[in-house]
Every structure is written in structure tokens, then in C-alpha cells.
Amino acid sequence: MCGINGLVVFNNKVIHNPQTILKRMNASLRHRGPDNEGIWSKENVFIGHRRLSIIDLSKKSNQPMKVNNLILTFNGEIYNYLELRLFLQKKGMTFRTSGDTEVLINAYRYFGEDVCKHLNGMFAFGIYDEKKKTFFFARDPSGQKPLYYFHNNDFFAFSSELKTIIQTELYNFRLNKNALYQYMAYGHTISPNSIINKIYKLEPGNYLKLDLKSNKIFKKRYFEYTYNSTNEESLEFYVSKFQKIFSDSVKRHYRSDVPSAVYLSSGIDSSSILSQLSKNFSNINTITARFEESDYDESVYAKKIAKIFSTNHTEFLIKKNDIFSSIFNILNHIDEPISDLGLIAIHQVAKSAKGDFKVVFSGDGGDELFFGYEPFIKYPLTKILDSFPRFFINSFQKIFSSLFNDDFGYLGFKYKARLFLNSHKIENYKKNQCWSGSFSIDNLNKIISKAISNQSLEQIIFEKTKDLYNKNNLQNIEKLGLEYFNLFLPEIICSHTDKANMMESIEARSPFLDNEMISFALEVPKKYKVNVFRGKIVMRENLKKWNDLNFISKKKKKGYTVPMSRYLLEENDLTEFLNDSISSSRNRNIFDYSYIKKLYSLHKSKRVNFGKELWNFIMIDNWLHTNNINA
Figure 1 (cartoon, rainbow, N blue to C red):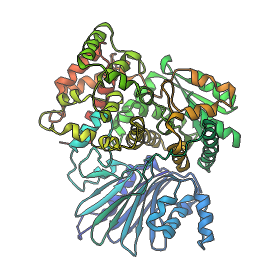
Figure 2: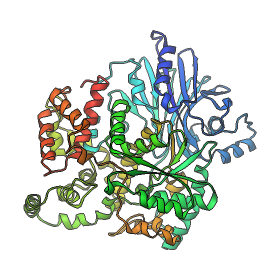
Figure 3: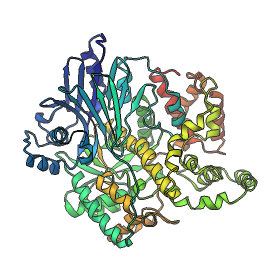
Figure 4: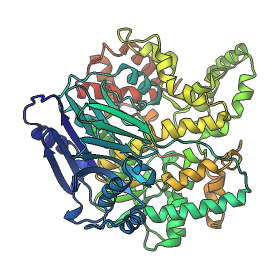
């Protein structure tokens, strides 16, 4: 796990001291790699690296790494590096290190552009070929590791973080308006867009090739998330197969030369990881957060699970002041805006774990692969809802809203019911944005300043989901699965896990996102993933072998988040910050602050919960101001 960056200068463009620019880029990524800094440069190519030492702690594995005519800068882990190393040794290759970095560069020597098909891991890397004058970049299939790049006639720059490229000042970077609409609707931008015009995110499962002789780029998808549940077997068959494949994945992910721990909530995902670790290893560490707000706290259950598996369990008390500290830390340092509240909770736990552990295990991917989120469970109900005429639903909504205020806890029934009713008779590819997104399209049209509004706003927001839902050979719930894997997983889940942990120099690993697990999940029939009562059926059945864990399936899921909606009802530093933002109207050419004020007033009246939307606004408004980005 590291930070990577680099710069290529074209057309003999004269810039003042590119070495200084590269050092500045490296310095901005120090939190991603505090253990070592490396720089390689020749002619018009400048490559940087910050190292967080995890496997092979020796200096020989420092980067950028050069083997023959190839120079590699790499962020991530190759979990099947031992198997690949053995294969390459049989082909006559020799190694001077025991780590995965040298395996990766030699795998590229052997496989060339097909290398990603042979990698099982999380990664974003660049390999420069001095002889061919080409640069090869790639990103893992589920987007666990980020890669941003900028390209024009004079420069090509890349980095693990967006702000690193902005700070090069190679270009007059401005707001990407299309990405702004996506962010406001979803709480994140959608690859290849970043929030900055001309800076792009390499999409997960893609590679990019830069030809330095012609200054042209070529991009190709090497991985496609495609269902393959043609040969249907029994539930017992899939449970048995899950156990074998997941056990192998956990063992691969456990390879490390530094202390590690499991982020333990009280859910199925982290318990599944722990159950497999306990079968193969001893002296396992677990860590969990204990929140002051009882309806957000799962520490009692986590402690119970830790006791069942006899782990070395550490519990961190997270007070309200701690959460506010994380909120402002994130607002000041986040490299690209993302408004998911899980970012705050994960950062606070990572901050507490720093110093004791360099590697943590996360349950990311379980809900996306095995249909664990509530929209999967409620999706069949949409047919019943849409069977009612519009006037009936409108009348019901008016009665419902007059009788009930929104809940202000974690995803309360009345709050969810309002969002569900709002999805009546809208196209299927728009429904999940209505349920799980941020600003509604109606509110978005009012909050965006008329100076930058766009008649094609809906087309821009739903372009990617519409393409996914146009796959006619799939059922709608499977299309929802495509949406979660291709959009929500990389842009929200993997993004907040990477950003929150790397802010504290911690590597997070996700065994569910192992290549073999992904392939297996694509084989499992829908009926063994979800029904109208519950999701993740295969995973639940697997845990039944541990009778002491039966309580996990019975308790209500709380999620890993913070009570933002409540905080925005109080008088505190955050609401003072929001009031200052509204009164200063510092981005008035982008937002209609009078409408933000209206939403905030409705929220404070406790009639409608706009906590998610207001946090979305706080994040983007502050980020644009802090980074001096204009429309």
C-alpha cells in the first residue's frame, strides 16, 4: 500500500524544475507512504513513490523499482504473488526480493498487456518502458485502489490522489460541471469523471497505455462483471463452495510482514472473515468502535463475537468530540469530495488503530456481491407500488407526511418509507438513486445555480445506470446488482475505505473482493442471494455452523456511520460552519444558497430529514472553496 505519482513532459515544453514538482507531488502523498520516498527520472519522464512497507520490509523492495528497461511505481497488494513468483521462476526468471513488487514487474515482462488477467489483488500501478517509450497503467477490477490522471498536448500527470495533480499547477483546473451533478445526486462522481475538468479517474478493471512518441492514449477494459448462473445447483452446494473459496481468499489476504487486525462490527461480513481466520490462524487481533449514541453502537455484539473466536480484542470509545474532530479533519484534507458518512466512522477507527496495526481487514464487497443491501430486499415491492395510480400515491403521501415527521436516527422506517414512495412509477434505472442517493432530481434543479444549470442534467446523472439497465437478458434485481458493483462499490465503499485508512497510513484489505470470490458470486443464482425477507443467504447459511453466532441474523443492522442528521439539529461547531457557509455564499455562481437555507430550515423543524443532503453540500462547498476551484 503506497502512493504513486508521475509526470511526462511533451513537445520540449519548458517548465520550471520538474524535479521540484515531482517532489511536491510526493510530499502531498506522505500519509500514504511514510516509510520511504523514491524518485526516478530520465529525459522527460519523472516517476515518484511513497512507500508503506507491508511485505518484504527491506530497502530492496523500495520503489520506483527498475528491472531491465522497465520502471514500476505501484500502490496495492498482489495477493497471489507467491503463486505467480513460482510460475515465473519455472519460466527462468530470478528474484532478488521476497515481495510482490518485483513479482508484478516481472509478470509484466512475461505477460505484457495481459498481465492484469493474472493478478489477484488490489492495485493501481504504472510501468514505464524506456525502450518502447510507453507507459502502462492499470487499476484492479473492483476499484479498491484509485488512479487519477491529467492529459493534454504538453503534459501527462498521474497520482493516487486528485489534489496532488491540482497542486502541480500545470493547468488552470476548473470544476467539472457534469461531475458536480453526479456528486450532488449520488454523493460521489462517476468514473471516468472526477470533480475537476480534464482530470480523470481510470475506471476499475481497465488499463491505459500512453505512447510517448505520439502523445496518444489507448484505454481498454480487461474485466467485465457478468452473471454466469446457468448451471443451477442446490443451496448446500453453493454454501460448501463459498466456504472453500472464501477460506482460500482469507488466507491469501492474511499474507503480511506487519501486525494486522480485523475491523469487527457485529455483522455477517466481518464475522465471516473472522470465522475463516480462526480456522487457519491463531493470535488474531480484532478492533471495534464503541459509540456514545446507543442506536449506532454495536460494540456489545462485537465483543461477544470476539469472545467466541478467542481474539485479542480492542475496543475504542468514540466520543462525540472525536467524531467532530474527524469531520473537520476530513473536510480539510480529503482529496476528492465523497459524502458517504461511513467515511467519518471508518476514519475515526483508523485513527484509533494507528500505531498498533498497519493492516486491517474490511468486509467490503459482501453486500454488493451477495445482495445484502435493503434495496435488493425491497425491490420486488416496487411492482406492487407501481401498480397503484399516481393520484392515489400522491394522496397517500400527503396524508403520510401530515401525520408523520421523518425519523432522525439511522435509516428509520418513516424516512425510508418517504423515499420508497417517491420512487413510484419512475424508470427502474432511477429508483436506487431515489432510495440511496443524495439530492433528489427536483431539489438538484433548484440548488444548482442557473448560471451553470444544464437542460440535460438527468441524462448526465443517469447515463451510466441507464446503460446497465439496458441489458435485456437480466432481471431488474440483477441489474441493481450491476449498479452496486460498478458504481456504488468503487465510488463509495472502496473509495471511503481507501481514503479514511490511508489518511492514517493504514492498509485495508477486503477478502470478499478477491478474484475467485467475485467469480463465485457471479455463479450463485439470485434465489440463493436474496428473498423478500433477507439478503446474503449463502453467507448466512455458512455462518450457521457456528451456533453461537445465530444472534447475528436476528438483530437489526445498524451500519457503520454517524448520526449526522441529529448533529445538524443542534447548536455545534458543524452547524456554525454550515451557517457561515450559507451566509458567505462563497460559491454563489455554483449554488443557490437561498434554497440550501430553505432545506436547512425544514430539517431544523424536524419535519423532513435532509441530513444526508446537507452533509453532501457542506462537503462540496468547503472543498471547492479550500481548493480555490471555480466553475
